[in-house]
Image (cartoon, rainbow, N blue to C red; front, side, top):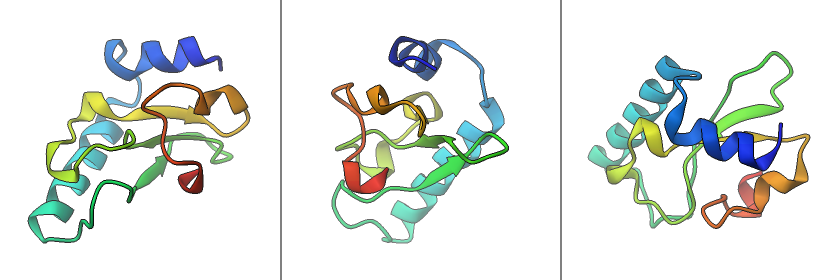
Length: 93
């Protein structure tokens, strides 16, 4: 999966719609429970059989502000996944 495909899936595709909603809810709930320390933490959710593709929060986004459409779809087999400006910190990968 190319970076352009990942970027396109971020906001324009309904790929993994329910998973995006569930993960966004988890971020918002964590913020409500005060389980968020700054903006470099992350949660992720694998969306394929081998776990190489996953949804994750964009870098520098506060948990309380994350919407399902903000979540990034990354591919662990594609190093270019980390090129976009809002890619997560490499420690999250």
